[in-house]
Image 1 (tube, rainbow, N blue to C red):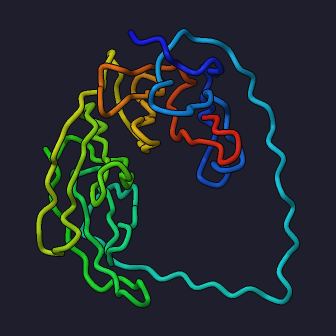
Image 2 (image 1 turned 30 degrees about the vertical axis):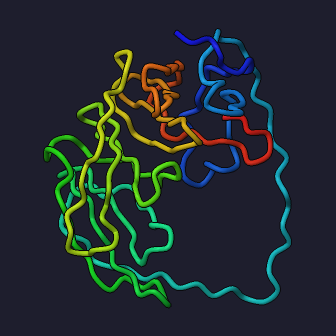
Amino acid sequence: MDRRMDRHIDRRVDRSMDRRTFHSRLLSLGTLAAAGTLLGPPATATAEPRPREVLSPPAGPSRRTVVEYDLPPAEETHEIVKMPDRPMALVSQMSNSRLVKLGLDPRTEQVTAVKAFPLGPSDAMLHGLAVSSRHPGRIWATHEGADRLLLVDPRADSFEAAPRIEREIAVPGGGRGPHYVNEYGDVLWVTLKGSDQVLALDHTRPERHRLFDAKPHPIFAARHPVSGDF
């Protein structure tokens, strides 16, 4: 095992974070300055409250509009990402492992077309989605039921073209149930609901990875925008 992990690692991940408190309650898993700092001996860090900016309420009443669009039938619809510089968004449907393409109006970004495509076996439980910066035009995805990380070409230039899985990475070390995934440089951070862990993995050299014990069923992991802590 490569021992170049950052010194400050918190082995705790708070599962009580939900979508409302996600950005305001980040616990530290350590600062990752570069892919080269991925691995090393464990240490301990203490999560401290982050100061939050207090915003004044807007003058006058605010008006917001919610528009609903029908998606192909599925019991569980999960993540959504917008493809950079393309009039397309992608949605994962976990119950049947389908990736849904949403064609968008280039000016208004309203949904103009919807089509679902199978992505792997129907019982693989397609879940997490993240746009890749290291692989432009590609996304990372998780097969929660198959314990796989996927690099996918959604073929965003053609609405009718079926997405292609270009690469699969097995979750290492007995980790199970990859849920959330995101890319930070050469490193993927993945929450593992099935084994109650968080995985940091160098996607250029998957043998370089670390598994962190977490509280039951961790949902998200994120990097603090100022400190760089996870």
